[in-house]
Image 1 (spheres, rainbow, N blue to C red):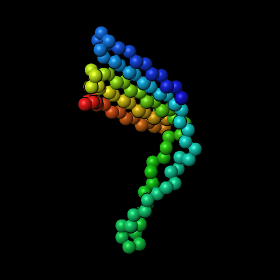
Image 2 (cartoon, one colour):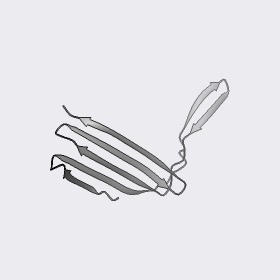
Image 3 (tube, one colour):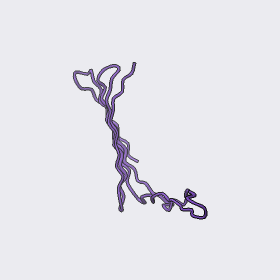
Length: 100
């Protein structure tokens, strides 16, 4: 796991920027997801649902940045990704924080 973090001031020292990251190797040993849910659709007609298989031997990347715009206001953004030989999953969030 590699976790860098860096913070620095901008705008004459009034605003703080914090950047974070994480890179890790993910190994799933049981990819089959054996758990299932059983729903009864009608008398004698049941069906099962199974979750998607996990990525095996994949890399996980998380990154984020936060910018303080004053004593009580900041904005942020985050990214999360899982990259494997047979697929990838990507996600992200962004928002603002107001403390009062």
